[in-house]
Amino acid sequence: MSFQLLSESKPTARKEHRCDWCGEQILSGETYFRYSGIDEGEMQSSAMHLECAKAMEQDLAEFDGCACDWGFRPHEQDRGKTSYETDERRRRKALEDTR
Image 1 (cartoon, rainbow, N blue to C red):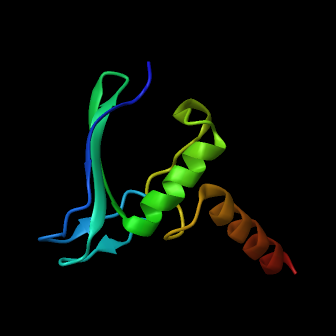
Image 2: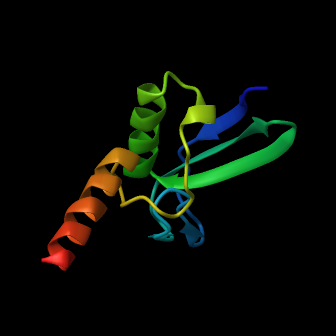
Image 3: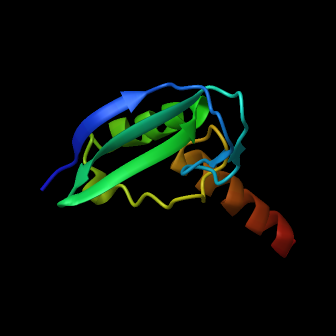
């Protein structure tokens, strides 16, 4: 079963939210990306910084839109960076820490 998008918008936050991509706060007054949909029969909604939503789109494009091979990890990516960019930064840091 695949993801079925029900709605998406770019509202202005009236209160703080937590970005589902990077885990940082979306501040009140900030424009952000919100979507809702159904994934494997479960209702889902998400809030992200605009730059994080763009990074997510790049990640999905890398996997031809198939989230089954994607391995999304909520709140674990760097803000505005793809999973690959985040993993590369972590690998470099780990290598530096071993020196």
